[in-house]
Image 1 (cartoon, rainbow, N blue to C red):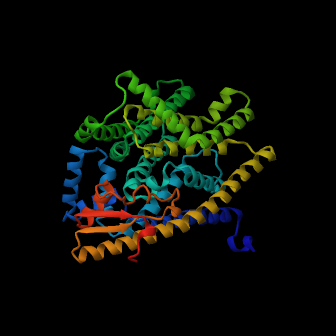
Image 2 (cartoon, rainbow, N blue to C red):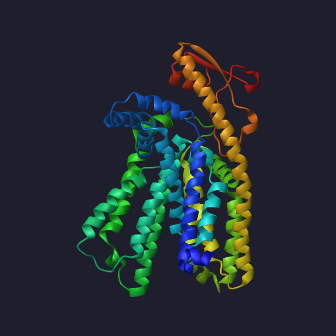
Length: 468
């Protein structure tokens, strides 16, 4: 019946693969629908509502560039989305998530055509191990900074690698156009996120170095013969965008108010230790899977040289992962979500080693299928449980928002509202980190007061609330 409906084996593989892509979009869209505006979203939307044109939004972002942060590309995206209906962001964010899964998939070598098992593994690893998923993928402000930023960075890296793989030895009349295109594409890729954009630059440099080394080894000539203008302009674009972000006056001002327990070299030692602990806390399971797969692939190869050549892509991404993590040693107190991009790089390395495991012995084919099957089963129950709690949290946010709107319309100046029930907390909602507190001076309470126009907002436990 299946063969009759889908046709040839190739068509069946393609159909199931596209069904998996569509399912990935639907599943993340549901969680996007159940994620309300929170904390920074309220501050930014309040500011956006005061702008009457795109140019005024640019002016707001310029002011932030001068006083707070240089992540202008991501924050400009946020302002544009907040100026639209909320459903536009939820749909676009779901597309961005699916694009991220495909970009990871496209960066894996040695995979089969329409490799459903690898694509499923990519999705499962993101859902289960992406750093602070609730903040970096679902929360609007966080998603624009981390999910969208990583998509832009990884998109450029993927484009650059694709062009390298198809680069000829001689130039042609389209070199100038390609150079201009790569320059333009590289600027936003370098201007997204400090450590993740830096990781993207490192990966492009490594890929270019490997390309030139391979050409020289094949032909025995100076590698500069094979260096095309677009190869340089793309990196120059990344570096230009990176410099615009790092050198933002707002970064200097913010760094001036940050305090640290240690100073001098002790500060860097302390930061290194904190990063190491963060790597353990965020990536220990992924690193264990990486190590097991690496050992299997190594023992399937004749020697270290063959292993390094065959699994070079996994090793490069692992190196970029470490560099992206430990680049945070330059920051006094990085937020946990700053490791999101590094985690995506590690996921690529893990999936690459998974693809590198030979299935000549049936036991390894069974192990690979078993790994995806077990992760799929765990994720199924997790999704169902957390999805139900997300719906309950969304209901409480919605009830509270409607109440606040009514109080604002009635001219009430001081408002008391219920906090979330503790029983609904789960890893896919940042609602509890972003919830109102009992203290009216708490910064989230202040955000709500400013957003709705109250003098103060106070929170009480949900069990003590009887208004609705």
